[in-house]
Image (tube, rainbow, N blue to C red; front, side, top):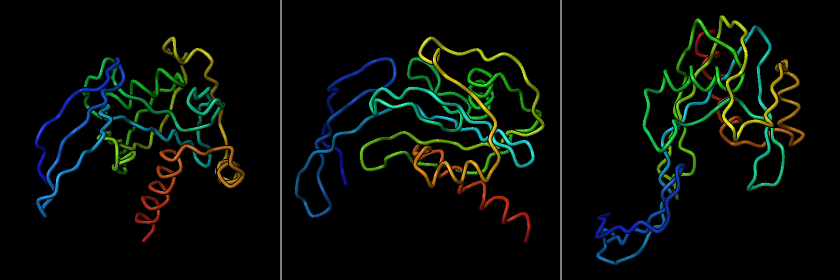
Length: 179
């Protein structure tokens, strides 16, 4: 597939929306609408069988949602994934991790977005005060045991696809170390 042209349709400090004119391998032309966002880091704070989640209001859904801490660098910047993960963990939860283990890569919505996410497990945690951004002022954070997190997913209390996929990566990561 070849991109023939691209035009920016919309931009704000968090994303750029563009429309690309493309030519497929059979010679036919088409368009793609693409949302460009910087890559994000998602962190699973893990203390034994406990996981630390954050809850915030998600405006597009009109709902409060529990999820793992995650975020991007400000102003569409790209950032070192490990540094970004440490910053997001500290900002959203106040936690500091002596150990951050990368466990996988997630593509958010590859049919319409260029955004990718790096998943980390944070362990050997110490507590501090959160350093939340203005848009995170209503955020809450709490520890849950694994059974409770699983129940919350099953009952639809956790619906964030990235968080659910990250939990799957964690289970695969742990399984590979047991064998």
